[in-house]
Length: 450
Image (cartoon, rainbow, N blue to C red; front, top):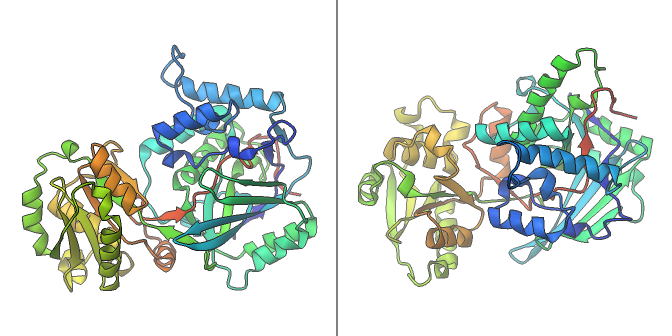
């Protein structure tokens, strides 16, 4: 069963940081080097210095950035930049955002969730992870000894009982309210009422948890838990390292938004890549339709490509491709390809996904890209918008782009419930959950709960 628990949260001291917008960031894995520099310069106490520290000039060793993050974290706590709650709480979090002219409000409960192995079925992943990212997060966690950002997860709650229980303890004014770096309105309410906490925890107990965003952080927390258990074998069952910081939303909320995760490939790093050879092979699996492009600039094609992509999705499995020679094509999967002997080993829940057809038929069968190449961040990158993908082709080492329609939430649930895993970066839940509002310091001798 899912065990949700309150905790004594750590957060920025309002008496010293009056505007949270100056110190919060997106999650570490979507921050570009340019954004990292921006957030470093924005405020001396910006959370970027903790979650994505950069090696200092003359630093002591290749991992000096993790030591620096730990030193900053300790100093900020000592100097009361970050302060600790006196009693355990849960938090109710609302985010107002606008997408394609429509205003949404995403709601969540933030608390600690007992760590469970994926084998238990309580917490269910849906995506593959990158080994290098987990190594990086583990080194950071070893030094800082805290969950600095939340794992974004979902739960199916038809009657919305979890948030209804939590709202019994809702105060009139939010603890924090501000406009973040993307223009979203963030409101965080602290819930300390024991009855409201128990109601939310009880309602969560029998629900499965689906990881939406933060697979690396969750897996790293499991590894860190194992590491600390060996050092503290006598730690109590509710020791803080047995829990992970979670942002939990109802997956049945109509304001839950998934955007695309378009694939961008630096073809100079792909051995023996040949555009004409790829185009000649595509008709084996796809109906290929050429699209006329306005060549100057490439971004002028955003609307037209976006509509062609949506139309392809309405007809079945289909996506767009932009090549190094700046030609664009719609690739519509031929009937029967993904339920033929070619995919006899594959679950139907996976075979129906656009991203699986792309990875299996094009990346593996036609381009012969190894998992190592697909794991290489210098070769493979991602964009959540058509405009962003086209800009990457136009301005960066990226030469080949595959544009996908968003994965639907019901497919995420189906795949995760079946114990299956989608390809990396199959989903892009929008907007990302800001980092820096609440944190969870880890002390092996401290117990979690009321």
